[in-house]
Amino acid sequence: MTESLNIGIPQRVLALRSIFSSNRAYRQFEERFRYLLERRRAEIAAGVVAEARCIALIGASGSGKTTAARHLFAVQPDLVLEEPETPRMEVASLPVPTPATLKFVGQTTLTALGFPLRRERTAQTIWDMVKDHLAARQTLFLHYDEAQDLSAHQTPKELTSVVNTLKSLMQHPVWPVGLILTGTAELKTIINHDAQLARRVYPIEFPRLDLVLDAERVRQLLCLYSRRADMTPCNEVGTTEFAARLIHAGAREFGLLIELVIAALEEAMLSGAETLEILHFTRMFGKRAGCIDGLNPFVAGDFERIDTRKLLNHGECDVQ
Image (tube, rainbow, N blue to C red; front, side):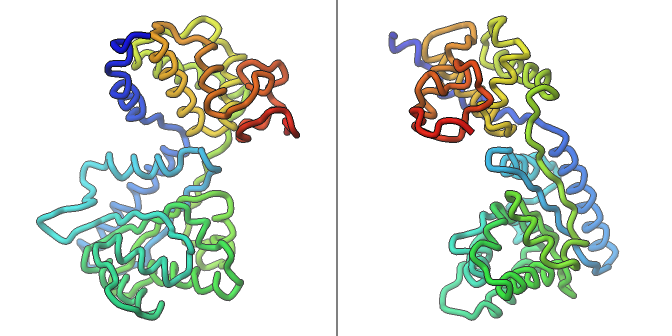
């Protein structure tokens, strides 16, 4: 391969990664967020203090929930994420830190708000400071990604403290703040731990893809991404059977499937191809998973039995 074939490939791949593919769960997420945002702003304008609400976006690893949240915040035309001239930060977004103790989460939240802690404080003092700084920055929503970790290794008493802290943010008598929690199915443990918290939550779930029902949509996505990459998918790549293989290769998760499509297109670019072939998916997955061909879902006949999340699969306990 000549060096000229590689020119511009990183830029082309970046352009593909910048494409955001919406789905029904995302549209529900956006609709609910806009409603809560407009309601909160109306309350502030009217001088009304009312309890805030929470959106819980739940999905498996690779479903695309984190990307969905980032995209949602980025595309809102009137949302202030950071404004140098003023202290406003209408959405503060951060991943739940490890270890997810109440004290450490509070410290990390303060840092995200631009006020890193300079000396040791108690957990109660830290969260009082969080609430003060949320008001000072006029923050309307606090987003915790990987929020299921808030319940990891917690005793029932500690989990109750976490839940009570989350409720106190939404119930603050001066500056209530809405919550956006993105996480895996374990997040339900936190939500259902307390009925008062649960009734304040709007749950939205990213469903797993279906090999049959989602095949046509996947074929459309393949065409879209191929077109943006200035390529044409071959006839075999455009079949329903191939769509099923691709869905399974992505562990039936929307976000992972998009990653595989982009990676296969990059493989095609690196080989200098103008047409996206099954071979490009086969090579890409082999490199990504380090598996033998017999356990590659783009090669194997009985592909549905393969555990596609398993790396370096050489046949030892190789099927689901």
